[in-house]
Structure formats: structure tokens, C-alpha cells
Amino acid sequence: MKAVYVAEPHSLEIREMPMPKPGEGEALVRVRAGGICGSDMHIYHGTNPLAKYPRIIGHEFSGEIESLGPGVQGFSIGDRVAVDPVTSCGTCYACSIGRSNVCENLEVFGVHRHGGFAEYVALPVKNLHKIPSSWSFEKGSLVEPFTIAANVLSRTECSGADRLLIMGAGPIGQVILQAARRLGTACAVADIVDVRLEKARRLGAEVTVNTKDDSLEEAMGKWTGGKGIPLIIDAVGIPDLFPVFLRMASPAGRIGLLGFSKAPSELVQLEVVKKELSIYGSRLNRNKFPEVISWFEDGSVEPELLVSHRYPFEKIREAMEFIQDNPSEVCKVILEF
Ligand code: MN
Image 1 (cartoon, rainbow, N blue to C red):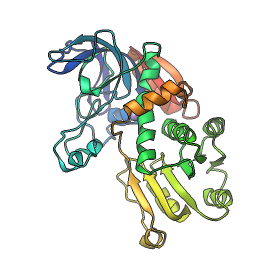
Image 2 (tube, protein in one colour; image 1 turned 180 degrees about the vertical axis):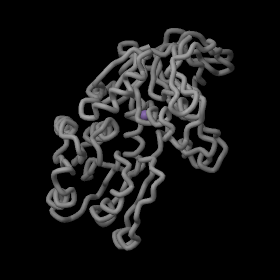
Image 3 (cartoon, rainbow, N blue to C red; image 1 turned 60 degrees about the horizontal axis):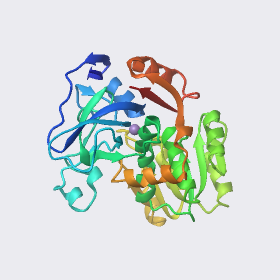
């Protein structure tokens, strides 16, 4: 079987690999669709500080069950599944208080162990979530990015009564916007690409700001009548923006962070204490697959709107180059297997 193999940073090839065998409690999944994420690009370029090499990348994927290992119940050959890429040990401090997505021994498919950009992958069935046979595999591969939104909105306790500023209108900004709009939250979105902001307005953003042309702080002052923003979620990850968030947040405001930058941000303690701000990191997802699958089922979000391009998986390098060269045209790129 063929797999997308990153031997080391800057070396990506389609490699012929031995067929994986499902062990105890595992299923062999025939992968059919996989979304390319910024973090896949970072693993390829050696800029993901968490990745281990060599690696079959890919953590946003779906497929159908080809065969079952010993001891598996509740799954059948032919079932369509979306894959939760997060595994945890169940015994460390974080796991013991129910925070398994920041497990001390966390392993993510496609980052710390082999992932889904392969024709076949053997996976523990506890990471598999059945999806309706009426769904496309592409739709199944979009569950994972929406779980990122579900996680940060639950971490920050976003409600329909909130006013939310989403920094960034790329794929993650857009899934957060869709997930917040299904709650009825009033949303503003900032980005530097007009096409993305147009899309954000179509997805229900009340206000959009192109921060290349306009002052974000002025626009947000106007939006909130000078009261400050109760909830800010950063889907950009530029460390320099953090002091701006502290200034723009309302008293008792919350800030959700998703970026992976190792560069420090400036933190003015006075802003945090004076307003009693809460700052939340949000990593991956914690058991959010069932919830997101129910959103897809009841039609309260539109995952299809995320997809901009499709490539056969053998052309992943071409797909990645296209993503890099065309930021204003590209949203989610799906690989077909
Ligand atoms: Mn991702």
C-alpha cells in the first residue's frame, strides 16, 4: 500500500509500505479522504515542534473498515468512520481530571505516530466514530477540524449571549465562526485577505475587519460601544497580537488561544488583573467527535463550504505548493485516496 511518508524535514515522498495489520482492539481502515492542515505543512517543513520523524502524516481523515482485529465489538466491515486522532494514557494527572487531550503521554495520529495519509491504517476502534453511509468521505474528514472549534468554544464557555471576535478567517477561523453562529453568538472576524472576510460575512459574521486597511481596535471599539469584547479567540497565532487582545477584552473577558508559536508575547499584568481576564489554551479536541457529528447530522453547520480544492493523494506535494502560493484562493484542500 502507498503512504505519504515524511522521512525527515523537507523530505516527502509517496512510499510503498507494508500493509498494516490490526492488533487487539483495532480495525484496519481503508482511508478514502484526508484534509491537509497547516500542521501537516509544518511537519513537512520541520517547523512543528511536536512532531516525531519519520512520519506518515495526516490527522483529518475518514474511510471505511476493511477488517477487524481480535476482540473488536460494535463495528463491522464496511462501516464508514471518522477518526479522532487523539490518544491518551488514562492515568496521568490531566487524564485523571478528564483532560485527556493534554495527556502527559499524548500521541496524535499523523504527529507522534503514523497518521491517515495512507491507503490503509490500523487504528484502535476507540478512536473510530461511525458516520452515516449517506455522507461523503470528504464530509467525514471534516469532522476533525470542527472538533477544534467545539473544543475552544467549550473551553471558553462561549454562549449565544456572547460577543466574539475571531482573529483569522482561514479554515480554523471559519469553523469557529460556523460553530459560534449555531449558538447564536454575535461574531466579528478579522483577517488580511478580503476574499476570506467576504466568506466570513456569508457565514454570518456581523462585522469584518481587514487589519491591513483598518485599525482593529477602532473597529472593535465601535462594535462594542467602547465596552470591550467579552470573548476573543485567536486562530492566527501571531504572538505580537496578544497585547492587543488584552487591551480589547472587556472586564471579565476571556481569551482563547490556538496558536503554536514558541515566540513570547508581552503580557501586561495590570490588564489581566484589573479586568480579571481569563486566558485559555485549547489543544486538539476532547471527545468532541459525537457532538460535531450531530451538528453535521442536524445541518446546523455546513462543512462542505470549507472545501476549496481536491487532489489525488499522490499529488500532495503539488497540493501543498498550491496552498502556499494561493492563500486567498485556498481554504481546505482534500486529498482523495
Ligand atoms: Mn488539523
